Image 1 (cartoon, rainbow, N blue to C red):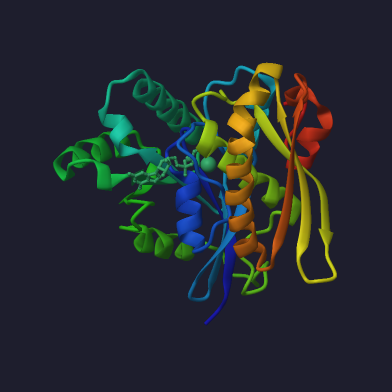
Image 2 (cartoon, rainbow, N blue to C red):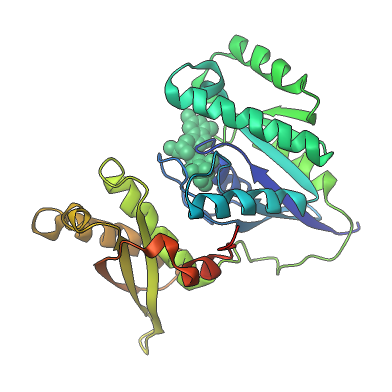
Length: 306
Ligand SMILES: Nc1nc2c(ncn2[C@@H]2O[C@H](COP(=O)(O)OP(=O)(O)OP(=O)(O)O)[C@@H](O)[C@H]2O)c(=O)[nH]1
Ligand SMILES: [Mg+2]
């Protein structure tokens, strides 16, 4: 059989489940997942295999109405991911389409923006209605029909990225869309993030899981040292940047308990992902201007001037 290989971009409103789906398709954790919107900040690639096809998934930042510099760079990179892809999956949060909370309305507006963008691009996308585990089946059909009627799609799937329901069918369709060609990655590679960056992402995930209420979208993690040790382990030092002095005690917690929890959870994940013992050291630094530093953008492959 001839081999196939290509790129599939996953786009969608914040919190639709794009990173969850990417990890599910890849079968390994390549992109971090939290309950907070705008978790993914730059395109993350994961490599999935389906028989003779290698599907390079591009998990993109949620597309939304940009306000700050980081937002603009994220929107730009999400559309960039879609333009270059052989297949585009538009992932839609089904419960959010049916709800009427302010968050649901924002998600619905984002879906409309994305549909307009897809139609303007002239490339038909694959509609994947996600989180079907959380809604009644009858309600889904109406949502799916209304979206399909916009003419932006040429396929529709109903899936649950969390349970895996419907994901194999979607994967088979993506494999079919990949052009013939040699594989870009070795068979056993699932992610192509540099280890330093992946390590920073894992710590950012734990940070958000623990303090998402108190820390509105204003922290970054940088890996400042990554050293292989003679005993086969790795020593990782990271700095957590926050924008205000008042946020430091939130991250430290009482007697440093919160920071300790974050470090422990991150170390556990990293030991599995890197497949060796990890010694992790975390520092917290206040830097009100981190979101406006040019160097930070280059590291993430984002365009500072977007
Ligand atoms: N019930 C249910 N929840 C899901 C499903 N898929 C994802 N979620 C949850 O939705 C939330 C957001 O998931 P993410 O994968 O981080 O979403 P995302 O689209 O990557 O979000 P951003 O990176 O912020 O744009 C998390 O709490 C997930 O656990 C699903 O199929 N069913
Ligand atoms: Mg994400």
